[in-house]
Length: 163
Length: 163
Length: 163
Image 1 (cartoon, helix red, strand yellow):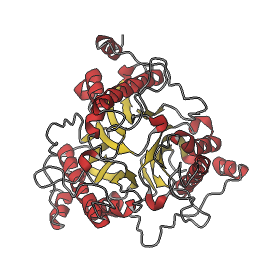
Image 2 (cartoon, rainbow over the protein chains, first blue to last red):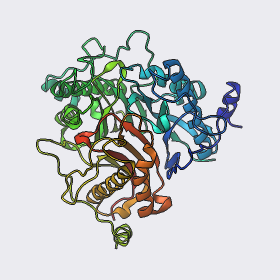
Image 3 (cartoon, one colour):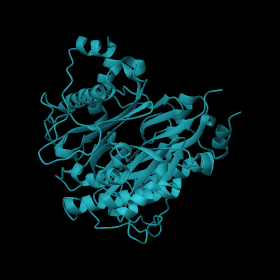
Image 4 (cartoon, chains in turn orange, blue, brown):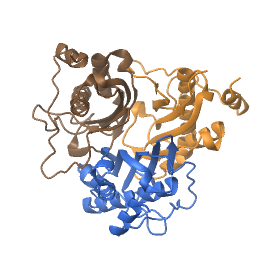
């Protein structure tokens, strides 16, 4: 009985399958690296139901609207929850969110990065509640992201041993 | 008797009040997240005496000079010390600075990010001394920062239990 | 007898001397900060045999090609291994790579950051093997880097006590 899996079902949230790298691209790293009580989360982007990276692509504030950016940050959060589930077996092992580093592919002059990355923060508080889901965060503007992703997020959670 | 609070008075440094989000902006995260012996510090910007974000705003190397950038990085450090004080009760609990990640809103061609973020590094070494204040650091150029902040800094410190 | 030092000799890899700051630049931080079982790695760039920063300089996707970027990421990895050796005494103390944060000085439109930072990931897996060398990673595009470095990488490793 997984409390967080139940919560995801209650919210009708579906986690995507493993990340499909674009043709010719190699990812020689782990999407989640567990070291002791820490699970360190690689940069993730939003994913489609087949595991490929999801658009709209490009800069927030130009090709991508702020509202679309929020939705993409939320989908990036779902991709992260999927990677954590694969790495940890059960999301109930997450005892505390630690850090969220939210990167926005930024059009010149765009300055509302926090309202974009709120898509991630709101998701993890909805799913984990305000105590476990509380986290430190930055939300900042990048000159470019892989494959023209509009949003990329890395982070870290604290975990309990597997039972 | 707080040694670090005494040191701040000696240096005539005043810490700002809690961060005032700009109108309509929600910050659904913690400015400092304590997990075990770690205090993880969210992205902070320089603050005015009323808690609002401080200018000059814009890109270092264009609207903001390198010397202004240094002063803003120092003020960002004061904002971080204020958040740490609120989260920890007493800055004497900081046993080691761990990581400083200094982000500079960068005009095209600006390449002196370390000399800007030195405003933060110099501050924490002045306040905590060279042993506790020693830290790993990066200083890099961003395409944009929230609300056109010229500098944003996140980081981490190691802490002792509250006494 | 250091297993990793032997492995570096086997691969004919030579680590650079301490980083030489450009004239007039002060680095008031540690290139590796050891806190408990963690060694936190500051932002590093590629280095020449005399310790100075190595080119080609500028944006990947413009002045610097993607293949040159890969080679610079690999050289940045060697600079990091050199700093870790100086801080830890022996690279055999590294029990797990934890996090790699790869920053690419990005020309407008460049979107192949992962293939650049693979220069770092491939190196540490070659040197440490797939178990110790496994790591979480992000690879992203910056608006600027210090001294027009094409690549800068920070990270973290888990360490055993000195023997």
